[in-house]
Length: 533
Image 1 (cartoon, helix red, strand yellow):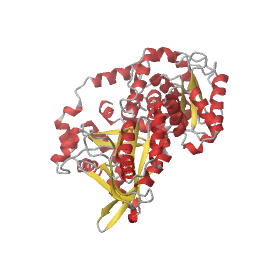
Image 2: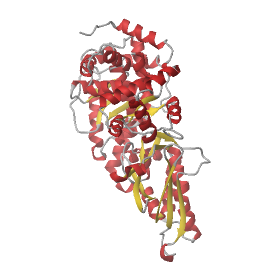
Image 3: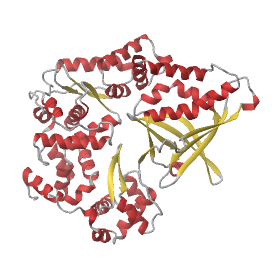
């Protein structure tokens, strides 16, 4: 029977271990770990194949999951790799020391592991380029523009993937303009930009270039046939929203406009669309309207009077644009009015039972996070650690579900969930009369308490007067999920219970009152803590 320890004892042990010399400094430990052929093999696979998840690493190695996990733990203790969350996956990546060992062992000449990289400096070659060839079939009486569009995308290491396709540039620009606001502002919903081609052996491989808004950035990624996935594997390219906008306009639209003007074809549809966008951006109210409409996935021609009223009401209800665009991106345009009615009615009905007044004090006395700077999951984890510290909670302290959360944050003990529905908006937090009120759609008790914790995390980090909890994978929702996982089941406590107390993940999940998936992710995504457990 495992020996139980008190929360204070656990905290003291963990703090003592944190003061010990870091294992990364121990070269002898690395030598011992890499003496194992299995560990060397996994290091080589990570260095050369760049697996996008632990499951993919298991498949590539042909080994059982427990064996791979043990080797990953050993490599992490030696400071050779880390495992970080990326969407729904856990990605193993080499540290700087791991890259050095991979080179020393002759696995690679140069290793730059990454699941997502930022765009290069402004003077680097543009990601997109359009080379206008001329009018198709010599016809100067229409707007068809024969052009070769090239995409330069980051490969792994020092490589760049260059792909291109000959197409009608005018048609491409018209399609982008038709969906302009949706392309830039509808989050977690990939938009098909254009098809790319690469010569492979004696044939040609094609892939679709997708652009996906996550919040304040755009991700560029490719989708190909399953058999061609390796040909098109590259780290997701992250572009700032403004950077992506300028890239499309400067490198794709302007060459088309210039070509048409040179042929004395003035005031063409794409030029009119460009002027329309520039005019909208000059007027804040109109610009806000179209950003919200785009997040709903709507184009100009699809908005009738009723939808326009719904958009205006949404803007009035959720003043914080970041929260509003998440709400819109997670809502079917046909259901906007219904969802808004649900949120406002529930906040009003549960203004007393679901009020959490202590949140105001904790946010006021908490850290001032750079909410749009660092990685979303790290922001959420850091704020959860700080919240538990503010509340004086040991790493093994179990919150006690939805009711426990409510008590911790000043609720009156009568916190209740709402009826569940199919809408992706799963919850909402708003200020009611003066203090934060949280409403969530009920279901499995552990999932419901996780939704409440997400709403609490959103308020503590962003402080918005109104904000949704949605079934989306956006930057903002990632902050809430990371906060909830760390607040309800701290990684240090999870790892200690599994590794030192020899408790099963099921037992640990039961202790903290969370789903098994939460405990699994907390354990597997924090290998740097394993050496301290």
